[in-house]
Amino acid sequence: MRWIVSCENADYKALDKNLFIHWIVRNAFSFRPFLHDFSSVNEFAENLYDLRNAFTHEGIIKSNCEHVVIVDTDCMACLSGHYLFLPLRSFCRAIFDEAQRVFEKHGGVVFCEFSACGVDLISYNKISAFIEAAYAQFWANYSREDNALNMLYDFLFHKHDGFKNTVRLYFENNPGSDYVIENFEPRVLSDGILFFAKDYFSGIVGHMIPGIMCRFDEIQFERMLVVRDALDAYSIRVDECLKHAFDTCDFDGLCLLDL
Image 1 (cartoon, rainbow, N blue to C red):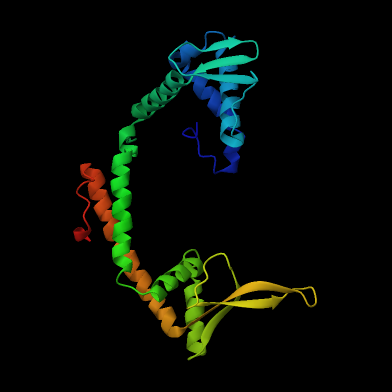
Image 2: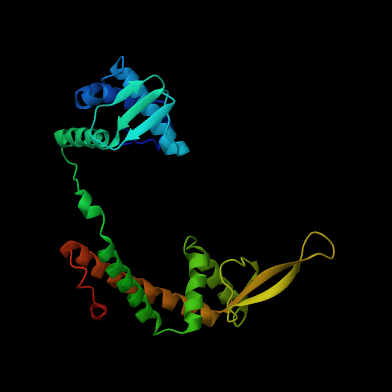
């Protein structure tokens, strides 16, 4: 029930369980079909919290009841010894209906229909085919080196934008030279245009380990930025086409000519 409080703040983490149980108890009327065999609402809420933690953090289904059996039908919850039989569909419906009622009571919360969160397989195939064709159309106008430069951009600058200034400053201070990254991450890509295999001595004397050296000059660096700017602008147009398709639910209308 992460709607109750943001647990990004460590001060709230200790309250998480209490708030969860409090919310269930306060809205017990909505969960009456599931309380049949529990001695109290609190017992039901405790088991539900344990189930939530086990499923979310451990990827398993268990609670203090030891065994939780998901029932694929709209029946009443049943507690027998160490077994809790939980009708998943009706239980989830009760959870979300009550949460929506609370939000609507306080106002200011906008909901979207579940159907708006996904597409069917036929529509998805049309979308993926459009995306594949769109970017094939883009790269048809660029060279293999441009493509390699773009991949290098992703590795070097995508999450380290400030590093561009470091490289630019290097070329200002060392005109006509190459920027070299030795022992470059070999799993990224190995393209003969920019990347060269090289052996490096490890800490053990005489022991060689394989590595990759990356090297590019100032012209390639500037070209890298030009290609990336063009790709970013093109991606915006692709997204606009997809947004229009989602807004109109017309995936047959996806057209490369709109790009």
